[in-house]
Length: 388
Image 1 (spheres, rainbow, N blue to C red):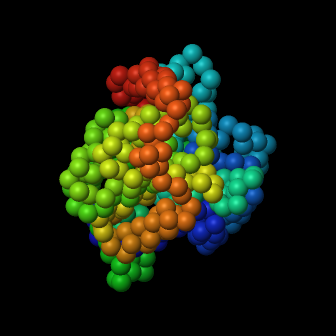
Image 2: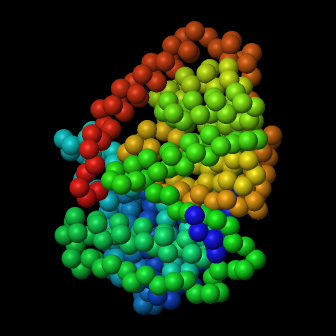
Image 3: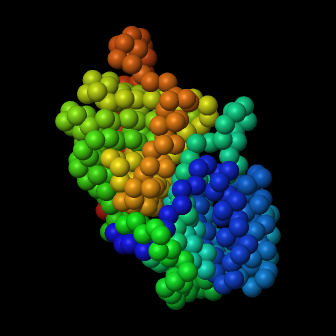
């Protein structure tokens, strides 16, 4: 971890998009933006307009989107961005082919942005409007705005992937490694310097980095663990670490998806609830809207915010990025928000409620869990791919 870093918590898109667009509008030299989903809605229009305007005023503007997550974005609008001068790459654009089960699920799931080497954004928020039809609350998610030393690590990550994808797609006009410059002194406030680190997951050297960071923090927890996770299906090590933490007296609170977004994943996740509840883990289901967060607070200092879920897709297949920090102020801000959501917007699964779950629902959970784990074995990489 490195110090000289200032981290600002951004709650949901209602705080994230204004901060991101303001930074893009103020850019003078260079912009990198990576996202899994770039959607054609109000948020997508605002971001696309800001990128196009930045490019027209001479800012070197780079956008990389995932070929599956952003497949519905109109090609006419992608062409308009190119016409405005935005350099555009699509990560794994050909996802429907005979290699899909082996390589097609290795997606670019991380959400990163770097503007002028001065400010970086890391989190779980896609370029997608916050409010789903029929929901009174925005999609529950988080990102962070970062100034200081870690900005260079984020810039290294985005520029390296840009270089890799450019070479793999033979876009020679895009093949350029960014000259890494230190952030200006004004971007490292003396009033706040937590220890922070950008933790990446890919299918080469960083295959287990995010999972390892979670495991170490959970195993070292002394008082409290609060985790909010959209798609919760941890492997045996993470599951056992949570059970063991509860067993040694740590308060373990999980804020999970309370609405069915993906049928198979939702019921497979529920199959694990019994073991967790038996161990004393609190499970709270978020109700007002879709929960999309991938965050955690452990004790009073350890925090992570990012794109990685605790599921096989994130931990074994996708490119992910999380910020991990030891910062009491950030930990308090995030914990306060999560605890408020648990108290006012979630319902806890009690032991009595779990024991009264009908047999046919338990059977459905078991079947969904078995199907997903079988699929996981089919698609899990046997060896790291050479490029992506």
